[in-house]
Image 1: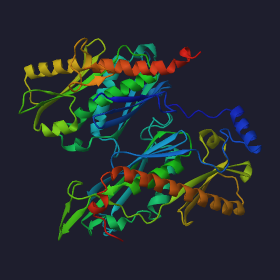
Image 2: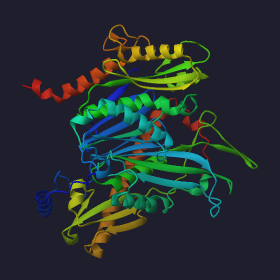
Image 3: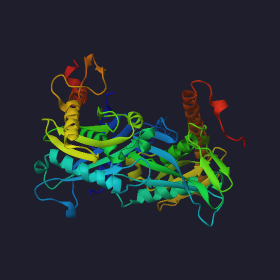
Image 4: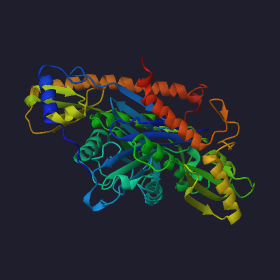
Length: 248
Length: 292
C-alpha cells in the first residue's frame, strides 16, 4: 500500500500534513520562518526545532532520541543559511499506531522513524520552507529464519516473521544519496549492503524499481517507488493551488 | 517564541460595532454553535472533534496501576492537556500558557470532580490493583472555543472507549485481551458538557462559542457546565466586568438547551459508529458487560 497524505489542512500552522501508512497516522505541522528566541538564535543560519509528541502520555527519552535524529537529518536538507536568525518549528503529533506495534519484535523508534521523516518533509513542503532536496525513507527488517529482507513491512508482517534479527532505517535524498542510517540488531556487512540496496530501490530507483508490495497499481502504473509517490503528492498539491489558471 | 499576535484596533472596533448592531462576523446567531463534526478512530476511545476551525483529538487509554493508599476502592482517572506549537506558535512546549491552565482546570472540575466517570468501577483488587485511565487532549488547531470542544471530545471518547475485561482469583487478576473477551464500556454516571459565553458591553451582549477573534475582544467569559438533566456541575466566570444575576439565570437556560442538543448529537454519532462496527450483528451476544 502506498502512503496516504493530506497537505495543508490545519489553519493556524504555516504548513501541515497528515500522513497515514501501515497503521501509523501522524499529523505534522511546521511554523516558519518565525522569530527565534535570543538564546537559540544562530547568526548565520536558521534554528530548526523538532517536537515529537506521542499518542499517549508526554514525551519520554524515546521521543527525545527521535527528535535528535530528525533534527540532524532535516537540518541537512533545509537551506538554513538562506533564512538566518529565524526559527523553523516542526511539530509531529503521533495520532495512532498499529495495534500490534508493541510486540512486533523491533525497536519501536526505528519502526516509526521513516513515517516521521515523511510527515515532516511533507509539512516542510506545505510550509514552503526552502529545501536543498527532498528525502524518502524506508525500514528494512531481516528475519532470522528466512533470508529475504522485509521492506517497509506492516506490523502484522513483522509479527509473523518473528524473530527479527536486525532492523535498518535508511533515508535517501532526492539525488539518491544516503542521508540517514539507523541499524539495530546483529548483522554482517554484507547483510547491511543488501538491506541498503533494497531500501534504495524502494526509495529512489529511477527505472524498473520494485514498488511497495508486489503488483501495486497506482493510476495504472505498476510498482511506483517512494520518490514517484512524493512527486505525485506534490504535483496534486500544486495542481490544486494553481487551479485558478485553468478556470476561464 | 513569538507572542500571540494581538488583534488590531481596527478589527477590535469593527467586531464591537458589529456586535452592537446585532451581527457576528460569520453571520451566526448570538446563541449558535459553529458546525460541529465528531469522528471516531478505528480504535476505541479516540474522538476527533471539529468545531468550526478548532480541532481537538482526545485519546483515552488504560493501564493497570496501584491505587493511591487513601482511596483503595477507586481507580485512577486523569485528564492531560498539553498544548503544542501545532495549534499556535505562541504555545511553547513545557511552559503552560494561561489558556492551557484554565482549560485543564475546567476539565478537571467539569468531568473528573463531577464524577462523570464511576472510578469505583475501575477497581480490580482493593488496595492492590486498579485501572488507571487517562485521557490525552491534543489540540491540533486553535480557533477559539477550546473548552467546549475539549469537553465534547473527552465525553465522546469516554463513551466510545472499551476497557479490557478482568478475571479475579483471590489475589491474582488476569486481564483478558480483546480477542479473549469483548472489552467493556466504561460506567459513565452522567455526561457533563460545557458552554462558554463571552460577554461584551458590560454584560449586555452574550455570545455562545466565540471564535478566536471574538475571544480576543471580549471582556470576560462565563463557562457553564451541566448535563442534559439540567444539573449544573460548575459555573466559572473569568474577567472583571460585573454581570447581572438575572442574566446568569438566563444563560443557564440557554446552556441547557445547547447541552441537550449536543448530547443528542454525540449519542447519534456513537450509535452510528456502533452500527458500523457491529457489521455481523454479533455484538449483543459477545458483550461481557454486566447489566447495572
